[in-house]
Every structure is written in structure tokens, then in C-alpha cells.
Length: 233
Image: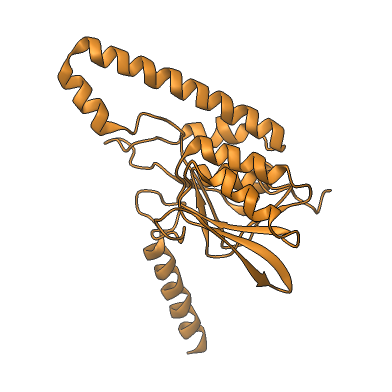
């Protein structure tokens, strides 16, 4: 009887996990906790006896400057806890560089929190980096082609306008890819994170493949040095 109860309990737990997964993006939770949809807030808090900076919300162009000011305002800050659905890609890169300019700064994605898109680069700016078990490091391809409304309007204007827009998209995407590559090298993250993971995810859904997001496992965040493995250091 006890064995049967345990078996039923295991089945129920598995069913909960399956239900909680994103059907289109099975490596990721269906409802990621990436914080509020508003502009990222920066607030100090006490956690486990330490002063940390809570960075929560969407990344916009003002974040790099605000982030530097917040860290400089309190010399006790030694960690930045992050949850965000992303936002301005270039601002994410710049914010990551701001974090790296403070030696020893630790960035953390706590258990239950999610860091997606431009947030990845903010997080990777940490001199030390921790993704707790249950924390979500979610990636996708960085591109400008998700501006579908603009693309549709331009197509309606004719072939010449469409060709011009495609050229702009290709140039902007190439520049962003170059920036991403340079950033990973500077932050000590494996470039294979781009080639093996990020650039293999689609930017938009297709009939053949609806997955646009990928959540790294604890093994993968160590393999790509997103989270340096202190056990081998």
C-alpha cells in the first residue's frame, strides 16, 4: 500500500512538472518569473546579512547610467539579483560592462527568478556569477527581424522599400552579433553559447518549429562558463 501511494505521488509530481512546462518551449517554464513589465527598478535590500541590489523589470536605454549610479551610491553592494524579460539589447550589453567595471561584483539569478534576452548580457557582466538551482537562464536568437509590423508595412510599399529594409535588418543584426561575440570574449563566457545555443534558436515561430526560447540546464551554464564552476577553480 505504501509503495502504491509513493508511486501515485511520483506520478502526480511528474504531472505537475509537465503542466508547468511551456509546450512550445519545453526546456522552459510556462510562466517564467521575470519580474514586472515596467522599466527595471534598482533597489537595495538585505539578504542573508549582505547588501544586494535588486534589479527587476525590463531593460531600457537608461539602465546603464542608472545602474552605475545605484552601485556607486552604496559601497556595501556586493551582489546584484536579477530578473527580467529583457528589452533593449544594446543597453543590456552596456549594463553588463557597467557591472564588470566593479571588481568582484557578483550577479545572481535566484531560484524561481528568470533572466531572458538582453538580461543575459546584464547578468554575464558579473565578475562572479551564480544561477541557483531553479533559477532560469533563458536565451533566444538576438535579431531585428521580429519587427513584423514594420516588415509587413514595408512590403506593401513595394519591392524597393522591402529590399532597403532587409538591408538595414541584415546590417543591424550583423553589428549586434559582432557586439555579442566581443562581449562574451571580454566576460570570459564561451563563444559556443552563441554558436551552439543562442543562434540555433528561432527569433519567430514557424509551422515547422514553434520553439523560440531555450533554458539552459545547470550543466550547460557551467559548460559555457555562464556560471564559472568554482569547484574546478
